[in-house]
Image (cartoon, rainbow, N blue to C red; front, side, top):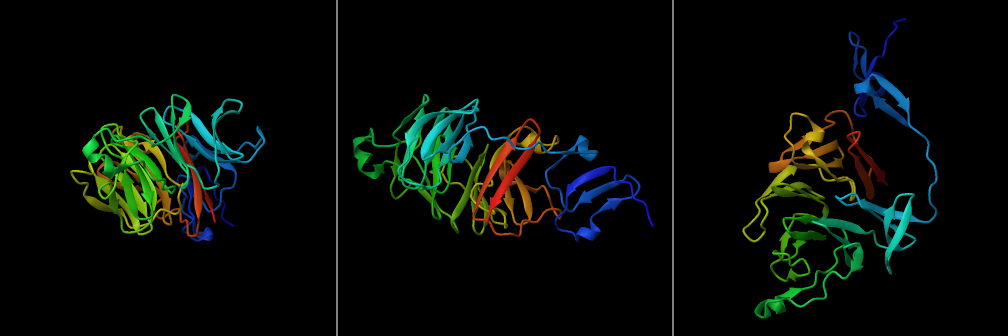
Amino acid sequence: MMRLAFRVFRGLDTVSDPQSVAYDRRSGACALAVATDVEILDSGRRLARRPGRVKVADGHWRDGWNAPDGTAYAVVDHVLCEVRPGPATRDLATLATLGPVRFAALGDLVFWDNGVEAGLIQDGQAVAWGGKLFPVASEAGRHVSPAPGGGVLAGFAGRVWWADGRDLRYTAGAGRWHFYKTGAGSIPMPADIAMLRPVDNGLYVGTALGVYFLAGTDPIKGMPRLLASPEPVTAVGSDVAVRADALSSRIPPAAACLWTSRSGIHGGLADGVVLNLTHSQVAMDAPALRAAAVWLPSTRRYVVVLHP
């Protein structure tokens, strides 16, 4: 019988046969076929059991989201709320429909949309998004209040962007985010859109046919489209914003994003460069209709839950 010493844990490997995961006899480094409720610490040199869960609030909670300034929002019992420490909640708007609420930040503004209803959180108060007259009379007839899309939202380059099936729509520029220009304010994509994530010099658009990168910041001048990854996003909600230098110390600081596909976890950088961070290690073959993800900057961890 051979005795093996496991001293370093390289993380999960769900691609290899569980009987044949990688093991280095010299260093004692091995991959894990299964890891349930454990933390991999000290660069793989220590395993620790994850802490248990404790109930801290009642009610039906869903659609949680953190703004870039750290403010948290969620829907609690059909009411859109700001979530405060405790946790305590502050009511912002009562929702009449049950569609998932999506959020986007643009500076200190927060936009939300559930496919039927839409609104804006400004100075901590819920106000209408739209319902205004375009200030240029000759163009007023072509500019309307943004129509709710519901699927995905993003704030990028002074505009709010949202998905309407396979059409990527965007508001007028120059601070006119209450208006959408009919017949001009959209970019057709090859398939239904499941993800919108901006980086410094472009926008990642995840579709059912793969993830595309729209280069540039001005849709009026044109944003060339690049197929950044042939693997589609697994489900709406698996993507998060991160800093590029959090993915690797060799990458300069810049905006980046993470998402999950069938072949594992991907990182999107500037210029449409995509990293497969779990290449040949993690497979997500099970179908998922929805997802929820969070980035924990203090531990540099991406946590995603896929719902079948």
